[in-house]
Image (cartoon, rainbow, N blue to C red; front, side, top):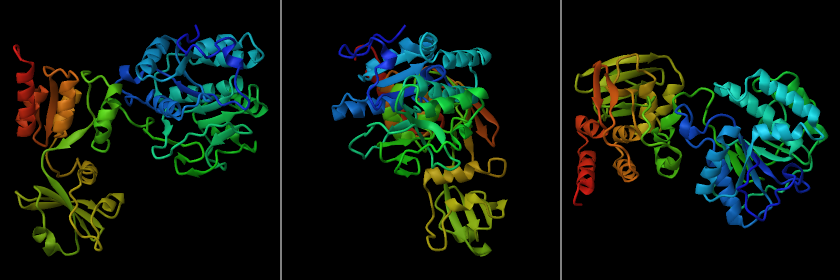
Length: 450
């Protein structure tokens, strides 16, 4: 059943063939369950991009770029509600319905090919990221053939400092990349339904559907989106954000990683704060700094004000120093990319930045290292916020209704000690007095009579 929640002024009859010329429709697609329900996905990967784009277009005051979001039919109602809550005008359409519609139209042969492909791969039961991305690539080509317009991956978002989005249509079938051997599917355009180039590219793909089949664009003289700077598409006003979905697992806590924690408050609407899941993040229990030395005799005269330190020796070796124990170990013999995080002779000041020290320490966990804590099972966002020592996020989570009674299991390394604790007990175990006080004040505020 087609989406009935689009605004009243939109003409709903013959929905698939009333695109402007040149087409200015914008399509997104998400293959799989909502990220809110999938502990292995980055929260918001499915809806953040479409919502941001729709909000910016609505602020521009133009209705020339209708947005369609394509999903598995069983999730259609969920996504309608999500976009309704976000107050954005995005039409939610089911992939299965498009196939049934096109089987009765002028592109029935292409639709039949794609339907047979869906049956062969047991759609919609696609269990791996690779399977879903492969399907997304093929579906996006089928979509541009039958619908026309722009296709964007859901991690394509507006450039923050650009005033206007300019999806005005392109003259020809267009793709992202540099046009040599680096074409890609994440941003494409077809000017009209049944465009000859769109048909050629689709036929090449459906002949042998495989992962990342970008050679379908080869030797066709397909133009690319202009004004590209890295992952920024200046001419359109968008950029691609990489979540590295191919290699990551257990992404439920993606927005509480030290590299991204400052984005958590604005992204928290995408997460289930009381879902219990294993966290891949680890947290160090001793302070650490990074130093540079050229003389062995310098090691214990370095200005180390932390409990532990890593020292790059002539950018050739890396040593771990434990100040209290007054010992040191070589953890890296030879140059590699880890040295790039360290001070240099030109800039010798110690580095205490938590992101840099975390990356260095994480590289040497199988060797002598500082103490750290890692989740075994049942972590919540409240537990992770405590470990980050982010009192502000703990307060936000408690205000949002985080459950204080949920317990998680952690292991302490290298002590080989296990603890099963609530988030409040974890703060007490770590002697984070400022966070203990937040929990105490919250308990008082919700106690009867308050």
